[in-house]
Length: 302
Ligand SMILES: Cc1cc2nc3c(=O)[nH]c(=O)nc-3n(C[C@H](O)[C@H](O)[C@H](O)COP(=O)(O)O)c2cc1C
Image (cartoon, rainbow, N blue to C red; front, side, top):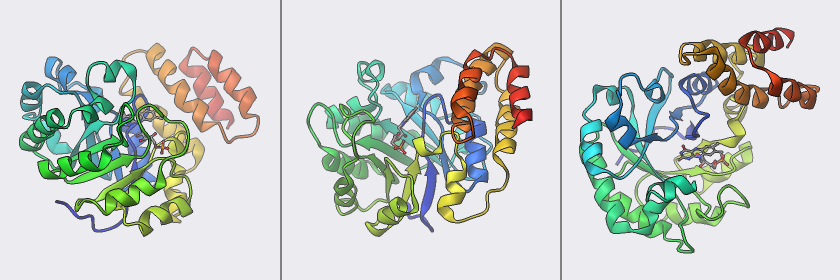
């Protein structure tokens, strides 16, 4: 079991969002831990791990690589790769609600059969060169078995647990079940992270009070890495404009074509401009962008 020396502010894993550049920027703004988006173990087993962009990691924070999948042979092969020494933790996704993931018995479907999950998580703990953590939900298919699930993870030897206190069926809607975090903290001995609707200092204070080891911030960090400085009461290291410039510059080394870079970065840009004057108008303009020059001209005007 691992105890953290201080309360941890983490960037939550977000597929299609938490690229290496965004993780580095969030760390610059004060995130103590950053998590990659979920990476398929099976895909890593088939493709070259060294060239996998999802595994690029350069941040100055605790580095977490998140996996999803269920093939134990793949787990054993993949985790032998030296690249994982570049991370501090290996996280296992047992919370993704997406139909294409659940249909494949991955993500939140892991919570359906605890014996099966135990076998996979034990294999992961055994094969991993780094401590393993697990991120999960309240439950799936009307069965809120998160306490039983968490105890099973603890028995497997995981280092910390992250709860997103919604069911698979809730997706991202409605309120998180705040009481569930306390119940979990009181039921296990490993550190517990709170994931879900953290936006303000009061939210963080509440998580601290009930004994959480940290918070993971997801949607509130979209286009807003400043949230880490704000919540920690620290001065941001650079401006919004500089943040956008840095993000784009780093991504230029990741994407092979201008078309794919522009298509990807437009999403981040829309979030970045959300709080600026004339945001609706600017967002309409961004939607039409097809070239890097259009993006760079907009940044210049900011
Ligand atoms: C766009 C998006 C992608 C996500 N991708 C992942 C993922 O790859 N792995 C994961 O464990 N959770 C993923 N999540 C869930 C978040 O990590 C987090 O648990 C959830 O959004 C609740 O926290 P929030 O209210 O701070 O966003 C994703 C959420 C969003 C919005």
